[in-house]
Length: 324
Image (cartoon, rainbow, N blue to C red):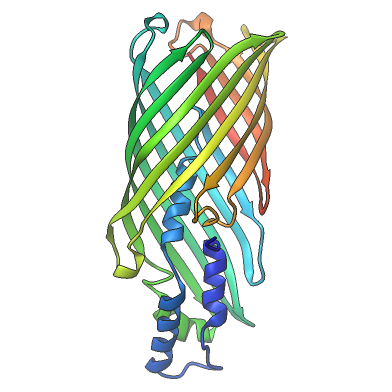
């Protein structure tokens, strides 16, 4: 199993031959060579591709993840914002229905590194991108659908780092810039997924069970240097269970329901821990308003908050959902 991006960086920084003070260009070259022999950028791209796959529903969401710290790593934090949307062709009674869906995503991964006493590196990776996909709804009975989908997208990954301390500024910055830090890459992400959608009323609760198994390939189309060329693949499994229960409450003239939010994600394959964790779970609560009386295409709006937890990670998130 490949270690996480943050752990790899720590190994690079901890294992480099750092002199007690800035010396010559030869020291810079020795540090750079040690980093080239140790560091692998592929895990970063794989991790970001996995984050994009976290969306299994049409909910707009913003989440903050806190991977567990390891020695020398300070305040690792991943923030992810996703805006998925879907357009279905045909009416509910037409059986098989093709659809087109899109996905906008923005992520940041930040962490600090204590290299030596008084020596510190503050680094942030930023990625943003968009994807377009086509698929078809295949109904099986009244409540269950399968959704095979093929997608292609574009993403850009950037790293920016600041170096603090005389050794970091004189040696680490010139040695590691455009290799481990301060680089960028453009990439395409393409692949397939199989989704499942099950909905029915059980004892006064509207139950939604959603699932998705995805496999995507990521390839850089351009990079700031040969060492940041990204090629790899990622597989992810997501599930989500939502329970909607009507209440006697109203917001203005709009009936309100309480929503229970449950779910989980597992990243599969040899690069599954590229972000420091390979699985997490979600649990939360929300309110849903029935706006069907307005005559809009959207019949309901949902706002909720959820906790994120799992081995090596914790966090929280907000969601904004809608239904037709």
